[in-house]
Image 1 (cartoon, rainbow, N blue to C red):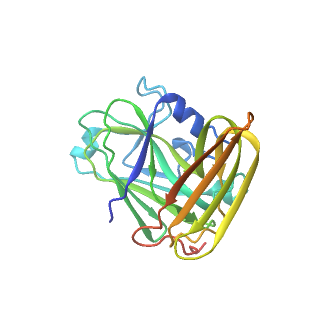
Image 2: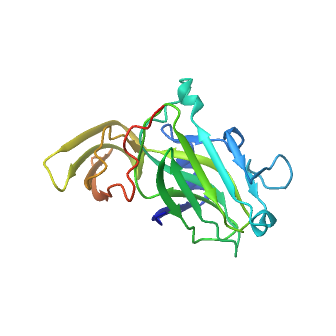
Length: 241
């Protein structure tokens, strides 16, 4: 399985803004369908957040830990997790306790991440690659054989986000390096946390995104970024329901 780059977001203000954004889907750890090798922390510790606990002695005994989840809330139309999203987990890490996680979507291996900051803090770890969720009864699996002790507080699905220092309207242009295909998106409501939906994005190509943000004062700021194509085994085909 391929080691993937990932984003490590921390700081309570940052996590609160992202996890409470309207387009972010946060899945409570106690609602995950199958949790083998994890202990639901239902008042077993003074940890302030709901979490699944991976005791160190489980890993020391060689016991694997696996989470399997089907998106029943989407099937029941309470949420819609489908489309292009970024996959993340909220972990509480501890010094000297490395905690790699491997990800699979149905039959496709997405890769694994190895967090580097182990500092008694909460981290939102996001796979640095887009994933297309097809819907239906696709199964997301998260697994580890690490001997570390750590806590998983949430599973998170995000859209592309960026933040402006002041409320601003946005014009976004995305185009591929290999073709003339473009996407244009306008966000007319002035906000500071911007969620971008790029429907039907061909994720086997590299996209360059240019953002023009206009503040209420008329000041304009411009930034550009690349969206990397899918890495390794491609999880973009529709999965059977």
